[in-house]
Image (tube, rainbow, N blue to C red; front, side, top):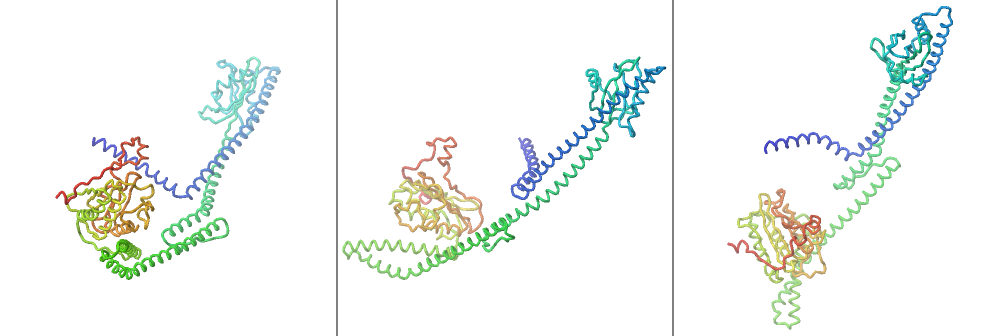
Length: 567
């Protein structure tokens, strides 16, 4: 097994080394518009130049070969007529020459027409191979140049035939050539085949010269097109890059950044429009910041100014509430209502003051070391009357060992109490589960209810100020709508997380994760945010899970013993 793992590891490393350059190229290709435009321009230019070059070479080659064929056929036809004339003249002479002299005379006469340098070679061969007849050629040309196919073509046609074939010489060399064959009748010897062998050396040199010129011209054009594409692409892409860079700096908060405007073309119009948009955004952001500052100042000022009259009203209300038994029933009820509403008003005022501290950036931590488990159990004891009143039992899940954390005890207690009261209020009497987790980096508390849950998208809204899932929902505790917002700021002040999850009909879960010491980094939470084993309806249906297998809402209350109960 170890050897197999070692081989697999070696194969994986080799694959990574091979694939790494391709991944780098892929990243460069996706990340550079200039590279894509330049490369595509070069590829298309190369394709066009290749087509044009091949077309030009084909035209030149065809023209040269057509001219050579016509000239060669005309020369061969004239030579055949000349050979027949020489044979007739020899036959009419008083003394007939010997066969060898007659063949030599014919070949010499035809060779004399070749010119200087020689434009062709001549072979005079017996029409039937193997006959003991004299055969001649010029310039040491070899009889092996004449293929059997060419001989069969001349015999079958009975007239002039030609083909492209190598011309071979006795010394072993060969050159490309055009071979034209015909026949001539020699008295006393019979039928001979006469072959004109035209070397294509000059035509080949011409084609090589044209091919080299086309290739050099194509390379130069390709380089020139690459430079042109680079310049044009840079002219087009550079403003886009500047716009992206400016937009990035604007996103980083440098609202005074602007693009440079050059000329009056479309790119200049783009830069002008971009600058106008940036100026408009800057103005609106400044207005929003000013409005936010005014709002924060207003909240802080009003909260402070209300404390003095509220104190006076509280004193009077307390006096009336303590003596309510001396009043008539209507006045006594009014005193009770006044006391309750003053409690809610004071709670709202405290929350507003706390929010104003966060907005002003003056909130501070009073960190000390304490046991998270004890704080959670204390929070449950405080919230137990509320749970009993709404009929929603609370289950506490935590370990027996201490869970020391260094944090602001007052703020963490406020977070846990707020989460617990909200869960009880929205549990619809189906119970609440409070779980405490701990690891080497962080501590976590999750509060799970089985009530109405959260609709899609609401998990990111629950920590907004004054936000409620259902504005018409009757609230038991009469909250201010700022509790979760303050809890979120308290968690962030410690460098921790406060997160929410929910599904309609399956309840919701809130998770508080805190570093063991304020603002220390941590990577994971000791507890999951999504309840273990939970699979959303959409995922279950796509995975083939039957809906009956999904966790169902709790129908009856329950309460497990806490750490203090177990001890």
